[in-house]
Image (cartoon, rainbow, N blue to C red; front, side):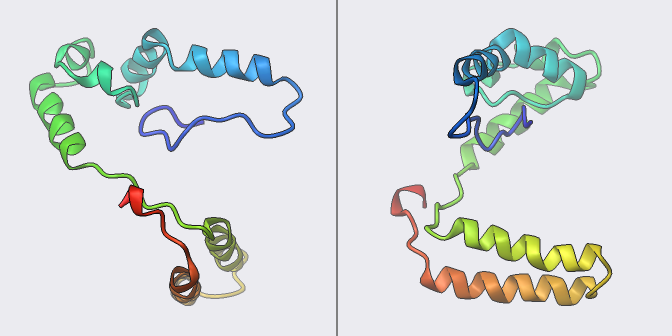
Length: 135
């Protein structure tokens, strides 16, 4: 599960209890739940409305300079952009998993595995349809 900087929350197709899953996601995304995660792990919440003032950072006694952290977060969000969506993302992730699984199994060196991932991704990017709205 991702709390801060979450790539997204969702319920898988065919879930046996989609209503319960939805209630759980709603619970995780309440300001109270997200504040508890922030206080425990210093992970800023994915709800921008919660990070629009320095008050959140002032609640956390582990942060030496709450105003500075607030300013850094504001600068980060100002420069933030979503990664482009590509039509063959699942194939790219499969290439990543296949090559790095061989590295973890000591069946190929790390540098060779990373190069193979890079080569496979470069080929996939040439074939991909990229969502222009996300750039």
